[in-house]
Length: 234
Image (cartoon, rainbow, N blue to C red; front, side):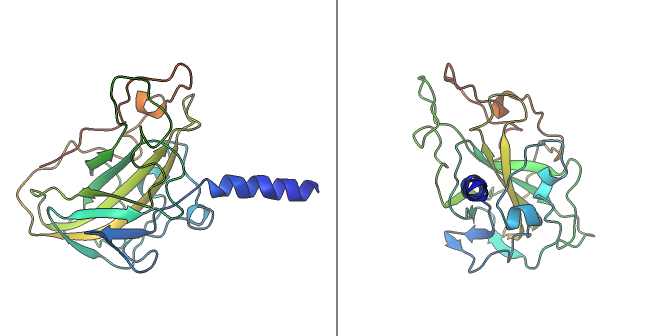
């Protein structure tokens, strides 16, 4: 009986987790998992777990350091990720990109240092009243796909695109936020001549006590600002 109870508790915990194993290109999802998305380490690709330590190297691509394929997307097009089982916790969903140096192999490049810039943020809907932990406040909550737009002025080239869903359900104190992360490999065509920025590093862009990583239950907050830099729109 005791083992059955433990198993049931573990199953409930896993059920609340999720991952992002497929890219969505102009509304069309890739046919199978881990094609243009780097396969995350075993604790995520098997049990869908998240990250809670903002200082961990896992914050880059959840140790998905090698890829198999590179998708092609034009500047100005829509790009997104499939969320397996749906996004099961409320909070913002954000998108970052990093340009792969010309002398590096996109399949093995480690995006360490100040190379990331934000290209999208699906954050809280704010109307002046108290915010909640439901879909009315959080548009990405329970979605099976989330997407953003490649800035039209982004220079052509090879990039990693990183999705992060920040779960705030346990974030009443620093260190309680959970991050669900994947990185896709893309080649951007028909780009412009913009200079993306500001550039940030993972880890480094966030601190555990950032206001956007804290969610007080009482009283409910009336405003919310997602962590990280402003979105670069080109």
